[in-house]
Image (cartoon, rainbow, N blue to C red):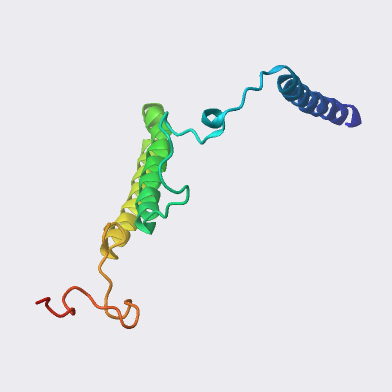
Length: 145
């Protein structure tokens, strides 16, 4: 038991040393010609414009999360679909089908809930209770003139 752990520990130490030596050699032999273009932030070959800190609309994260959930649904459904024919031959096809249907129904219920609560709308209208005190809606503002 101790010998097997020693082999794993030796392998881990050699791996860390290999990485450190590679970084050290690279730092020693690479050329150093810094200038303003090389030390600037690189983004898709374009020069940066504006501040680096940009606030995203929080709705983006909700919509991205819904997208990721359905991508996970596809990723988890695909392996079951691949072996479905084999399971059907063994008489277990109904188990796979019921699991897929239940999983998808749960995700669809979640989507309907998010949709019903307005979490998928990019521009969400706040109710009077959710609005900060003293803020006016476009309907409450006096007409200009």
